[in-house]
Image (cartoon, rainbow, N blue to C red; front, side, top):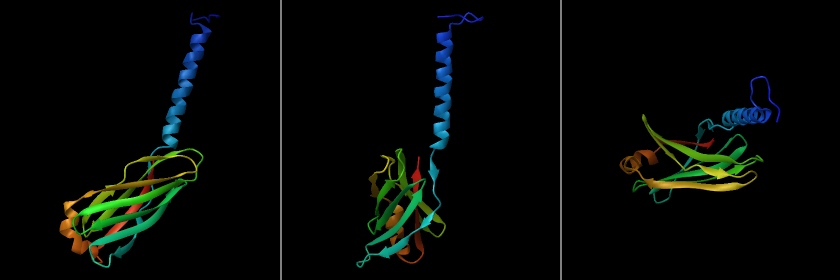
Length: 155
């Protein structure tokens, strides 16, 4: 190993240079692949024949990841999101769905968990639970005043 004028060996300097390059690449990757939300997509609303559930459906696309979502609310206060995400990229992406349920000035946000979608693959995403606001406000939500917007979020 040869020394430079500062007394530091050339191999040590190479390792430091490599560490700086890796740190720079990590920072650039975080900026390029960071979480980005798509714009709000209005949904199509369908009330079940028995009137006990309402399903909002739409599709969305962001950063070459696309999919369909069905956001269903039930009279008993339960809700569920059934969605998929198809990644048209070669590189895998994290994706999740966000649905905002709106009644007048009240807004309720529900989402699926984030899931890794490998390149050129499709994955299912889902979530569900009980929400008292839905049970209390179901009749108004089922009427024309209840709306939902759903978005796919990448990152």
